[in-house]
Amino acid sequence: MSSVKVVTNILKVNDELTQENKKLMNEKGLYVINLMSSPGSGKTSILEKVIAKLKDEVKIAVIEGDLYTTKDAERIEAQGVQVVQINTEGGCHLDGQMIRNALSHLNLDETNLLVIENVGNLICPASFKLGEDLIITVLSTTEGNDKPLKYPRMFEKSEFVILNKVDLVPYTNFNKDEFHKDIREINPRAKVIETSCVTGQGIDELCSWLKEKISISNPV
Amino acid sequence: MHEAAIVESALELILAKAEEHQLTKIRRITAKVGELSGALPDAMQFVFQNASQGTIAEGSDFIIEQVEATASCGSCDITFPILYYHPVCPSCGGLDNQVLTGYELYIDTMEGD
Ligand SMILES: [Zn+2]
Image (cartoon, rainbow over all chains, first blue to last red; front, side):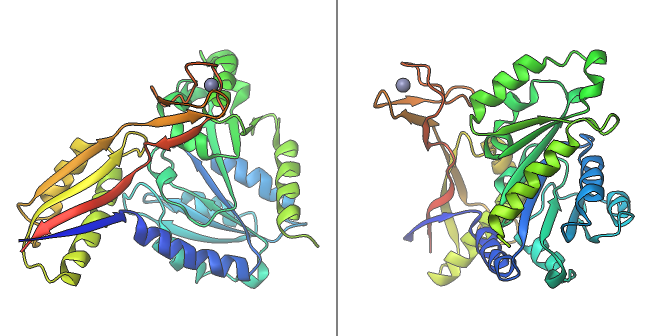
């Protein structure tokens, strides 16, 4: 019988792959966003709106993570930007290997901003780094304001937190004051923005935040 | 689901280490899993028992040690347990604290022949 001191992070393989991906992303001067949410939060709708506003100024590519379908990727493709679909076949998050495959299908010389739309799931994606510069988590008002406290990890890691479907607040029991208070407790540094893809609220503000972020990382 | 991915990675790591140390049978594995890691020990255990079948880790004791979540407050110079994910300092009520433990997710030791 022999005893081995291992002391190795279980997600090491992912971290190593991600570091390699990050190197490539840096070489190509990409600004990378990891966009996370629960299913049905409306993050694809937000992304559509953002792309429509920014695509003339910024060269955008999207990696679309989905459990089984290509629906979201088709919506993004209709915006006229590069998109690669990753079907995780039931897998609950994107990882370094999937991103590596996806990157090989994109023309990175023609890209400034890479948005990785993660699988809709508030738990697992938070554990897998993808080489992002910015983490954005989307929550919608129809999901209830208890979600940040139930799944704090994702909110804790996010620099931007988007509260979507604010137009529906009158029809839900969503408590915005509690939501803002909880986010401040979990992550005092997070910028919180309220959006609605129906009324367009918050989309301009979100786009200017993003432009500011991209220009800081890639000064012209 | 999440535990499945984690245990798969863990098993890959364990089998690679076993090969490196020329083990042909793994008897015991210890893992450290923090309360904030998002992985549930029971679910990991269940996945491990299934995923390890047919490997040299089949039938081994997979021991998961949960690590308590703690944080420290810079203003008060104290360390305190994080309850329900809230790193709120019990002394001053401050929120901007340093998380010390709780995110662990690693294989600590293994034994075999
Ligand atoms: Zn304090």
